Image (tube, rainbow, N blue to C red; front, side, top):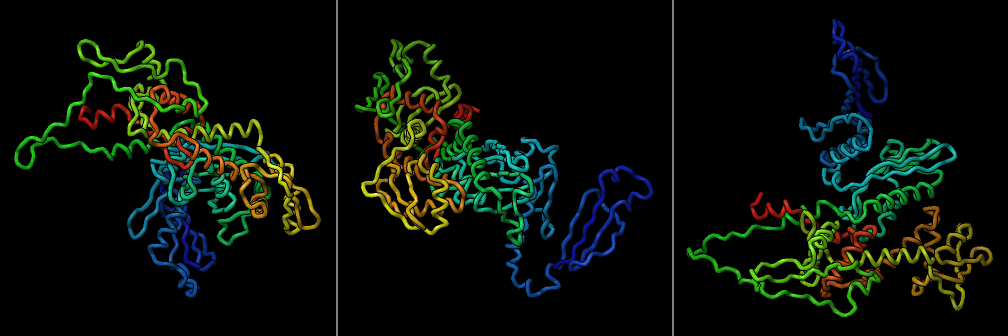
Length: 524
């Protein structure tokens, strides 16, 4: 459909020199699919592919092209995806005489080199906020491997445009893979937010069919359930290992909102009035309401946590009460020592090298949710026996799929029995679904199993309900906490998985380094 010229020259010929060095490159021309003769030519080492007069032989197809700008954007997207898949290869894209994209070849295909390449394509912010993802599963033909990087939940986007998926080095857009990514981040993001990931799946060619789409952007796996479980498991493991780490860009964004006030003269030359002095002669004790965080969470605060209070010595200088060792040990905690509560919503804590600001509602929401999941894993899903068993009519194929998974479904609270041809009898459901439409729930479950080949979707729905309950059952903004409760909150955050973000992907805390604070005051 075009006039294509391929010019290639091996790397070793570039250093050979000599009389025939200029002719060491070879050129091949293809015109409308017809291969021309292979000819010697001049050229630098490497391969250059040049395409001209696209669809010159089929003008009808030419009319379906979009604007030059849109097509240039599409070409750029293809080149960027190829660059992500092959970090050991350098790429350069020039349009209308202007270089729009260029990355140099990485020395190897290690995790560091791949992350460098991904940061070069997806942006340096992704590189700073990415966690490595890795997994391996055994198949009949050998092994399937998953490598890549995922952005922290707090590094999320409004669209799924920063989700890049590759199968055997080929960029793909696959519903199964996208669904697996969405399922893995179910606990961490609101429905209208999307994670940033770059995942690379390698497996035997017999395990995947790449010929189900003309552009080969969609694939069909022989065992889609295994692929999905591998991706979901690897992503959740990677996020769990990240602990309470939050996006580094959150603090950077916060610092940009600070402005240094001008204390120059007023419009008439007079000096502005100074702000009122705070009375520091009396300590200001913040009393928590009865039944504060320590009681709600079921967490017992560490001994002496937060007992330090502000006192005034005879010289009028405020000092922290308690032993110096106690203060130093508390400040050495990752989230520091609680110093104050701001607007009955934010906990201010001092760390060894800066300041941590915690959103008490978002943080406690994550803690409650993780505790609910632990209880569910330890005690199993609570079931509710239906007073009148529900008969749900399905087609025979859907019925067979459900009954084949009946054991898995029972583990998550659904007790189903076959009820003749094309129907199932529902005897028990998870208690969390007691208000749901049972028939619609079973139909949705059958559809999910048909698409994904697993009952993971219902687990995600259970977790979604737990997330909602955690949101309503956590400490609200506007709740006054005392120092013991604030420190108990910080200590539990340090030991709870995913404590860096709430269930909707928002950060639970922001950390400002002392060096950045000093810059605000011109000390650096």
